Amino acid sequence: MHIDLAALPEDVATLHRMIGELTTTLDGERVRAQAEIDRLRQIVKALQRNRFGRRSERLDDNQLQLGLEDLDTDIAGAETDLPPEAPGTERKLRSVSDSRLSLPDHLPRAEVTVDIAPVVCPCCGGAVHEIGETVSEMLDYVPARLRVLRIRRPKYGCRACGTIHQAPAPERPIAKGLATPGLIAHVLVSKYCDYLPLYRQSQILARQGVTLNRSTLANWVGGASWWLEALRERLADHVFASDKLFADDTPIPVLDPGRGRTKTGRLWVYARDDRPWAGPDPPAAVYFYSPDRRAERPAAHLDRFRGVLQVDGYAGFETLAASGEIVLAACWAHARRKFYEFHQATGSPIAAEALRRIAALYAIENEIRGRSAAERQAARDTRSRSLVDAMKPWLEDQLHQVPPRGGLAEAIRYALARWPALCRFLDDGRVELDNNPVERAIRPVALGRKNHLFAGSDGGADRWAVIASLLETAKLNRVEPYTYLKDILERMTDGHPMSRIDELLPWNWTASTVAE
Image 1 (cartoon, helix red, strand yellow):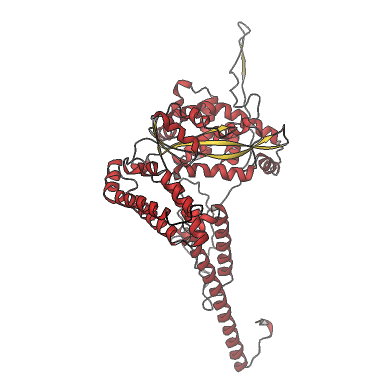
Image 2: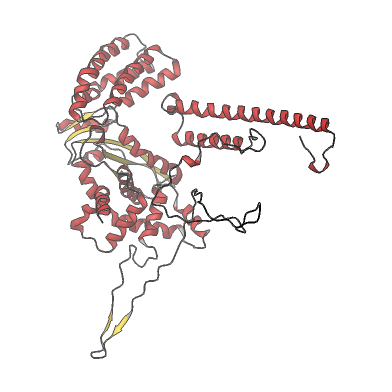
């Protein structure tokens, strides 16, 4: 309803009628806006409830997050358009308030004073005096900026002997290169942690007036990988020294110039994570690249390993158990997935019952996560073992009642064929119910694969493995990746001795940094 404030009628009755119409209009707009907000909130809640249920198996996690972002934006837009509750009152947004966010103390503060002018009472013109202040904080962003480091090395001459003295030039991470360790760390984190291909980084730098070709950035990545290779080897020593590992692999497209297309290589991931059973050693993940998926690849990686290896159903891992030095533990998540897919397609009550029985095992695991291995095994002996013992004859009985070539029979046979490995967790409190820790380590590779499309060569894929090993291990140990890479590149460039390279592993680096 439009009202011309410069031509208001003088008749009181007409004014009352206009105010009534305006109030009715505002109430209607408020009801419609609130209804839209409630509808959007219901959608968000439904998506969040299904995050670990049916939709989590169908929607990519990042697609789900994008959808939630759009819905939250719609809610914010609807609340912005919401009229005030009453004339003269400020509108209060019903979404999560920014004021609830706790701004970290380590961030620098820049003060802005908002004062009255002149400093006199606006009512009577008398002098005023300060009786206090109100302080509030907002989170600001200062765009990243490039700078040039000028390295000055004065020369000194001796008048007595004519000798010239000058400090040696500092070592550079890239021979004759322009990049400092800080810039190289930024490129690595942007590419392998934030999934920005080098050509996009080149475009971003160009907007700041700095022209750096993609090939130049690629040269920096290769040089940094050379420095970090030794650290990846020490990381592998730590991982394979454990007697309980997770293992998996994921495809990675690699450019094959000879054939004019890409080939499919593999990134093998080995993760060590003792946190679920309160183990003392730090978590770590190490990656290796191979141009194929032959069984001898994991055999070569694990030639030093002795212990329990938790894996999926890949047959190449099963050959490792022949010597008896490696014991395989299977993944209940993979067994569950086959029942889940069949249940979603058919609504089978047998598949639903299998899912219910497996869910009971997971409920117990959620309760005992973080306890010692002995406590976990004791709980499994008293609660989980009877469930597992009852499940096998039930599956065998169902197998004789379903079509032998159907999807349900396939799911049952998958579980029964791996039954000893699926039961491994009952006898060892360190063993998890599934292989999810290494699945989480694979996820960053999958996201990078979507953005990078392919690795440019076998060497590029191997560099990906080297850098991903350090980044993922840093994140597992709650170390900020950029700060970590920048510091270790500076130390290695400055001549950090190889005899003390263990100091640069993420968990040791954190301890030394805190001590300093």
